[in-house]
Image (tube, rainbow, N blue to C red; front, side):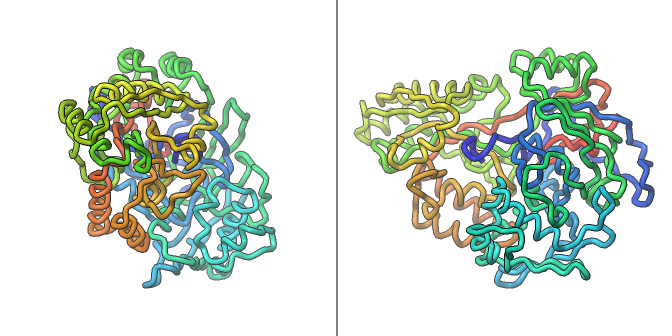
Length: 545
C-alpha cells in the first residue's frame, strides 16, 4: 500500500522492548455463556487517542487506525488470532464454522456460517449477507473492490453493478448457511483477502452510500456514536458470542478522540486524560515519554526503499544499481530519518513475514561503490532523484542524492506534491530514473509485495506500482506459479525467499528501512496488560487495568 493507493497504515506488528521487558503470554478469553463481562480483566472504559481515521464503513475504510477499531466490530468469514507474535498471522475461523474446503484446482472455496449468529440489532446473520457485502463494495466503488475481481462473474458485475445484479461465483444458501465462492483463476492469497474488513458481511440491502459507524456489528463491539473528525465511541455488542479465537473483550466501552497533533496526544496520556495514544511521538520526546508513561515500540510490515528504473541510464547497468546498494549507510539512516526508530534492511519483505530470510548482499562499502561506478563508465552521469513532499521522503532523498554524488554521479533532487507524486513516477512518459518510495502491507502475503511491485507482467504505462520497471523472465514466471499456491507452507515460503534473493541480486531497489512506531500508554495500564496483535497492532480487546 503506497500513499497513492491510500493513507499509509500501521499494520502487521509485533512488540519489541524499549528498555522494558515485554510479556510473552496472552490472557484467557472471557467465559462463553454469560453476556455480561465476567472475566477478571474487564474494566469500565478505555480512553484512546488516534491521529485520524478515514471511514467507519467496512466497504470504505482503508487506514490502520480505522481497521484497529473495526476488527472488533465487523467480523469476516476468516480472521486472525488475538495473540502476540507470529501466531497472529495465522488465519482462523471468524463467522465461518471452520476453515474452508478448497478444490484441488484452487478455484472453489466452501464455507459454512456458525449457527446462531446475530447482528448488534438482534437480526440474524445469513449467508447471502456475505454476497451483498461484495456487491455493495462494487455498488459503492469501495476502496477494496479490486481484491475481489477474480471471483467468477465479479468483473462483469463491476462493469454494470446494480442491486439486483448477480455475481455468479458467489452461491449462498440461507437455510444451511453455506457459502460457495468460485474463482475465475486460482489466487494463492485469496484466503487473506477474504479476511480483509472489505469482505465483512453486512445486512442485505444495506445502502451503498457511506455509513460511518451505523451498520450493525457482528463482533464483540459496536459503534455507539461518531462525531466526524473529533471522536467515536464503541460499546459491547450484547448479541456477540465469544469463540475459541475471538474473545469478548475487556473494556466495556472504548472512547476514541481524534487528535492530529502528536505533541497534544502525547500530553493527554501524560496528564491522565487518555489511557493510550498511537501518535507518532517526535524523536526528541521519546526519552521524556518513557519516563512518564509506558512506551511500546512495534515493528510494522513496511519497507522504505529507493527504486532505480532499469530502463533509464545509468540505472540500466547492473553495476550502477549494485553500487548504489553498497553506498547507502542503512544504519546511519535509521538515526538520520527516524531518530533511531527504524531497522536497517536489504530485503523487500519485512521481517514479520514467514517468507522472510535476511539478506546481506550489499554491506556498506563506499570504496566498492565508487569502483563499480568506474567499471560501469557512469562517472558524471546525470541523475534526477524524485521525492514526495513529506518530511521523511525529502530527508531520506536528500541523503540519497548526496550519496549518489559521493560515488561519482551527478545527482539533483526534485520534489512533488503528495497528491501527484505516485501518479507521476508511475507514468512511463515521465522516464523517472530513481527516487523514494514505501510499501505498507494490504494483507500479510508475499503476493501483496512481489506481484504488485516487482512482477514485470503487471507493468502498466500509467498508474504503475513497479517504479523500477523491473521485469525478469525467471522471477516473473515463479511469481505467476506461486499465485496458484493457496497455502503458505514452509516449502512455499522457501520459494518466495528464493525469488526475493534473485530479485535483489539484480538490485532494482535499494531497501533501507523497516520503520518502527511508538505506542504510548498511561501508567494505569500495566505492562503485562499490553498485547500486540501482529496485523492489527495494539489489541484493544485484551487490554486490561
